[in-house]
Image (cartoon, rainbow over all chains, first blue to last red; front, top):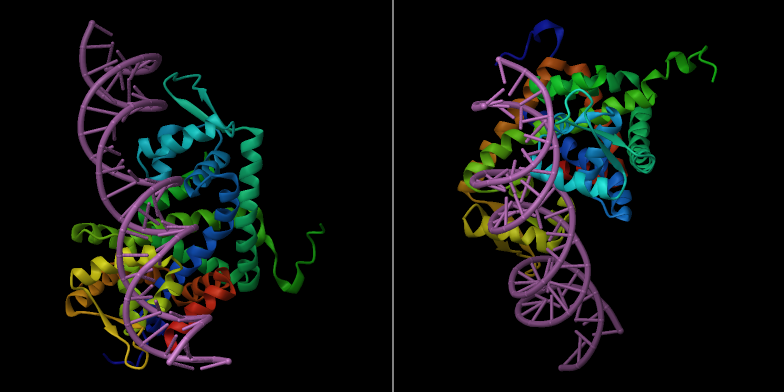
Length: 165
Length: 165
DNA sequence: GACTTTAAGTCAGCCTTGTTGACTTTCCAA
DNA sequence: TTGGAAAGTCAACAAGGCTGACTTAAAGTC
């Protein structure tokens, strides 16, 4: 391995196994921190991380169908249903029969649900904001680039899709 | 909020709630992809994600004690023990009585354990490497900066500590 | 030497959240 | 009218978290 020329004017040292390992561990620790703040809040309300995910995406795209949510979350219907049922029973989520297609259930947050979602995502955004501010806009751009490359085409499509509709 | 001057020559648009939300979702989807490759491999061997984490850190720091591993993983003794026991029974991990302090058990991978760890981390590095290569060294630097800022002081200390010892 | 603390391990039991498989009801569409 | 899609349900199971209580062995302290 000739270490001389450094192709395209960049060295490839950032692709060593050691660098990759640091990245892997950074993902592990950061994800733990990332979920810790909402987790604390959720526990106080008697919910789990699965409830948070449901609330997040229903808030993000009000009126989405169960099938769509299933695809976004990547879990089974039975698993989601358990979570969704408690959210509906507790009056955080409302399930409305579709106007065009009456088989569909369109999911919406109630005021109570929206309030919890705001609290959860404010907790999560707080940490994110601090990290962004500390790292600066350039770093944030890189952060997003790497994450998007890491998620692969299928998840990236879901990720992109979310914003338009 | 005067949107005029853009302090320090940078706009703060990267700190909007919308940008933060995109970051949050990127973490969610990327983490899912991040764990998917090793998860597939683990399933073939009848292990779970918890086993992977134990193997990773034992490989990374051979001879660490159970207490240290507990702190790194952030789980309870009972939870770790269940996992560790099967790894030892299956001959992937060896537990040696400490030389200085005989209460300690120092953990090491066997050849078989090291082989599985290599396979798992090669699967994980594969995705990471592709993402790094696609995003480039600048982006990678930003990625690491944001993750490190996100993990907070305690986890960051653990993260740093790991490399030296 | 007696006492306390630490490291490790264990038993029992509980919870959340994931899984499969089977089956129903309702409704759309060809 | 019939096939398939959307939703929901029941049952059973597994992984991997958790708490609480308790044991054993070794180290450290007074």
